[in-house]
Image (tube, rainbow, N blue to C red; front, top):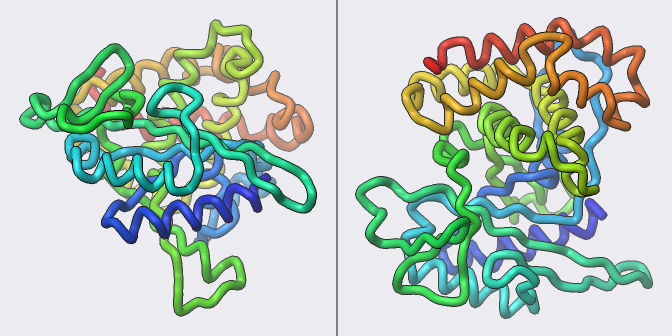
Length: 293
């Protein structure tokens, strides 16, 4: 499935770049690209690398300047239409069928939108979780307030040269910083910790993603996190993330750690991963220590 998603991502990215739109790819596929293609030395404290979690989605994060730009949002809609994506959740979740090695797969594209800057709020229409420019139609984003800092420290991943394709045509995919991923995943865990449906799974897979992100951080990620906290310390989304860290990942008996240990990916390597927990707790506490709650 990752091979199929990568092919779709390269095509979508190329079409969007041709009309002047740069995407930031979040979600499981963004983490997969980081796991697979990002260089640099990981912390020796976490020698066993947690496995990437399967996904069939491309989570496209729309930046604050894009969600207020009707012309570019309409171009995004037109690109999705040209690639035969059909909306399954009206105007912001799309999918298409892909034939691959005599099988048919479904690829989904979810549009998640950072909130607009305060002085741009009059350019958008917001209805519940939906947001769009006032002058566009048939294309929305899922309003994701915790993505307010999504551009801070974004990480460029050189995908095409790593896939063995012509390095003269490198493709750079931007993914969120490790710290932004932690912010997003802490909010996601909080939202899903009490939901028993299969997709939510009481937040277990989001707890595992938090574990994966921390074990994968490089020195540059820590430096980026420090700059992020300094820049957005007084924002609501960051204060909420810090509160969730303290509530759910503050101690060995905290709910997030209990749900992490119930996750199948964790249980497969429990003997090794249990040894990481004290350092995980210390690391995540340090990352959010300077956020004033």
